[in-house]
Length: 183
Image (cartoon, rainbow, N blue to C red; front, side, top):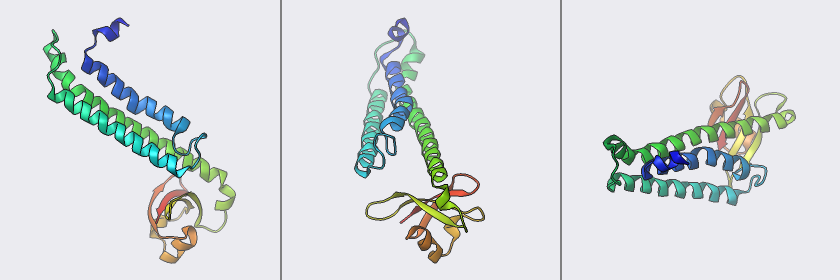
């Protein structure tokens, strides 16, 4: 408790921003985020989840910028007083970056697990595909098994056979599976 009392307002704000946008975001993403056990693939919830975190990030950005502009409380250490003005912005950027990395790794893990669960549907003559998430009204993400080449380079007809639509971009999940966005 003594440690918290010795911190300035800006240092406490920085710790809060870092905590909200890194560990708390990841825990919330695992527990109640899109594709979690509790929410499944509810599109409306996923949409509001992303919008809510976007609004929180913009609010935190405005507060961090306001801290830079406003004069801080006097402090015996001139360095801590000066550094404390930009510290919330640095903490916010760090939290968003680390949260984004962790969220991306979690999404990749979920897609690889989905591919393993649907391994029987992906076996056979390649390329093969299983829709991971269908968009509304169209588009989505498909897991494509193609060990020899990137599914983005397939002919238009092969793309339509796999996903029903044109594949726009793909990200390699492992040596044989790709996460492909289609429209």
